[in-house]
Length: 424
Ligand SMILES: Nc1nc2c(ncn2[C@@H]2O[C@H](COP(=O)(O)OP(=O)(O)OP(=O)(O)O)[C@@H](O)[C@H]2O)c(=O)[nH]1
Ligand SMILES: [Mg+2]
Image 1: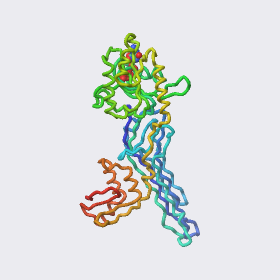
Image 2: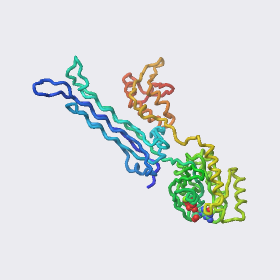
Image 3: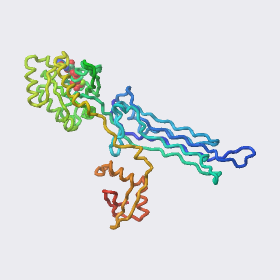
Image 4: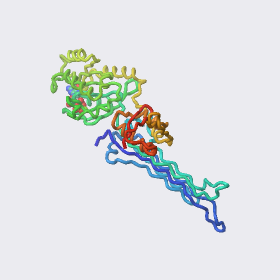
């Protein structure tokens, strides 16, 4: 099964508690403290595997947890560390915080391995707490908390160039001609069912990555054909090649076909049409007499650079690739890797301090560094964002504090710029 999206819960291990014990030796009635430290909790690590090209491993299971550290033991024994859990994903997987949709990490380019959630630290055993005045400390530190986060994994292939067009236009034929990829090619629509990448080597050295995706027809945005879900794989492309069949055998009017595909692209994401798009009129070999005439008409209609090619004979392909390379060169400094906007370490940081005061109009004023940060990256206009915020208020103990201060239904709460009425 090809899957390019999954929603999972990840959880790091809790740190083991420090141990409380005392030395027992012959002739020493009350030995000193010898409780050992707890082991650290396992981390959740994401790692790129080049053997993977989809996320199906994450469709069967929902929760992925590293193991906890063990408690320390007597005689200064260190508790066993929890085991890290390494989750393998294909290159191009974007890990997002599920509620806010913020990007935690884009597993692309140099990001091959990332510790996403750190396990809790092991607690110190009581052997550390003996002082001159406290010879027999009955105190050890608890292990650090486990951290749990719901994340969305989304695969967006990292290709420089994307091939789009009606089914049967010859997209896969072109990819197989230019690269090492071996896509299926056949004389019927929807031969390609999943995106495929190929590396196109250039004569003067250098290369680029090209993505072949399923064909698009009218109504794809409503789910006709294979739908449009797979278009996420060309969202990062710097150039699109729009291929159209001009043979007239199956489809009559290439201009109508291009229009139909454009409409679908726009309904998925208007930005796709803002990308540089080159049109390739394919199957030129089938009508030597008027192919150029058709090319000219297409160019005049869409005002995009339009090439006449044959993916089978190779005619015109060199010129087409020349234009692709020229555009890629123009955009070479642009990264297609998504920046991280959500840092789990920051999010779970124990800076839980907050203050609740009663303002002059009887409103409750809530302030604190973590809550301020939280407001910065949460879209409260969305239902999900607001639910996330409410959960946060509860988790942080802010609701409890408000209740202790005597808040009643209908009272106003002000959190920085945000103002809302409290209802239990
Ligand atoms: N004569 C001729 N036939 C071509 C050319 N390019 C592709 N074809 C044929 O057109 C048919 C469809 O080619 P594919 O490469 O599978 O088309 P596709 O655009 O990948 O189709 P989907 O995967 O269904 O979207 C095959 O039978 C190809 O042999 C060409 O330049 N000339
Ligand atoms: Mg194909």
